Amino acid sequence: MTSGFLRRYSAWLMMAPAVLLLAAFFIWPVLDLVRISFEHRDGAFGHYQRVFERPAYVLVLERTFLVSALTVVICAVIAWPVAWRLATASKTGKLVILAVILIPFWTNLLVLCYGWLIILSPTGTLNAALTGIGLIDGPLPLSGNMAGVLIGMVQTMLPYMVLPIAANMARIDPRIPQAARSLGAPPLQVFLRTWLPLTMSGVIAGSLLVFIMCIGFFIIPAILGGTRDIFIAQLIEMNINKVLNWGFAAALSTVVLVTTLVLYVVGVRWFGVDALWGRQ
Amino acid sequence: MRSSRAANFAVTASVVFAAVMMILPNAVIIPASFNGENYITFPPRSLSTRWYATFLTDPVWRSATWNSFVVAFFTALAATVLGTLAALGLIRFPPRTRSLMVSMFLLPVIVPTIISAVALYGLLAQFGGRGGLLGVIIGHTIITLPFVVVNVIAALQQMDMRLEHAARSLGASPLRSFIHVTLPMIWPGIAAGAVFAFLVSFSEIVMSLFLTGSGSVTLPVQMWSGIRFEINPTVAAASSVFVVLSCAVVMLMGLLRRKQGKAVKP
Image (cartoon, rainbow over all chains, first blue to last red):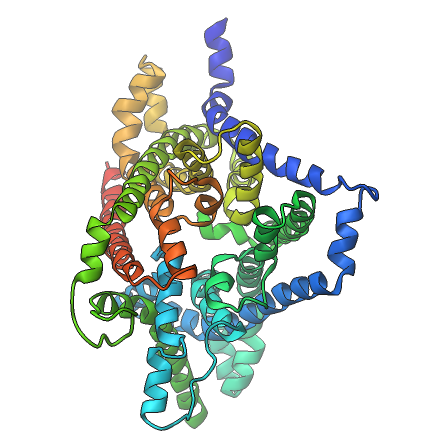
């Protein structure tokens, strides 16, 4: 009797410890955070009114979403040719490109930011080199502002754009662009009419992934960005640690959470976003 | 013909640009850490190992490093046991159901860490469990669990599940058939998950920023305050420890992947 029960539900029982841990320390506290966001003396949406009506906060939302979108575009432009080279390279070439592209994936984020700080700061390597050869008179503002944040974000996010596009390219039948070429289409037309539309789903998958990860970024804007132009995650942190306004932090978190989940569901359902982590 | 050569050049240029961008911040860290000045520059103006001496002798840095090792060890242990069990359960579902469930298991990677960190911080604060190493270990286990699940499922998909069924139908108990049939074929996948969980936990910063207290500062948190609140060049010495660790992990993962390929071959 008991062994029949164990056998029938063995798969569920093996998943139980992990599911319980996630339920107790991840899903439940996150749902509780969402609940707190609706607790305000002026009604359930009091915190949300502040988020969407105060110009200072709207600006933070806009900045986060815009810089994330910009990161997506820059990553896509750099990643497409890299993925192309990856798809067409020899076996050794593939390994080398992959190893280099995956560096940020293996590196501690603080180390990356610190490395960029050494390079980009007003007294840093790049500014010293540029003033040294007389190209500029004073240091360029490359850190402590959006330029620094963009450089850091593009670097860390590039692998997440290259991999879905490369996976997509590997599935394309090479005879399609060949046919276009043999029918007399010039290279630009071959690119615009065959390669680009055929790789679009990979580009969209990568874009969704990069955007999702960017809007929650905290470390990169905190180290490479300025003290004034902050991201949503920094506003959340400030409200927890300095202002002690949990409800407002919870409302901001809920906005990011809902955006993330909606985009993730869209990505999984139509563009195979989770394929990157080994789904078949 | 000319335009295709131009296109080829443009492709090569972007690949080189991307490669330089990927390598640059890592490449400056190690030379910069041997700087002898009071602030870090690359290339270094004078050479010394004084920041390594500080890193190795200063009790603050030593205890942060020790805490990180303890947290990463127990995180890897918990995530490996729970993640392997979960993967063994997941593999028994039909592919469609399984892929839906795996997407659920991936949620801690998708939800921004700042949100899960704030949420867990709130929960632990209610029960007075904030500030200890246990809270950090729980937080890190949640983040690293998906990586173990994915690695072990990938290994299980490579093996022929009929071998396990054969062992079971010949009368072996589930535990016996796991230890003698399944484990020898998937151990490299499990080990890869464990190694990766260790690296992720050892480098994790956002969860740790919220969950550590004065006695449980981890190495990344100490580096964070070294970067944010004081210009402390010891950070560069600590960073090169991470660079070396990452290289070791990458090599180990490559080795394990090759072992996994061999393990499933009859």
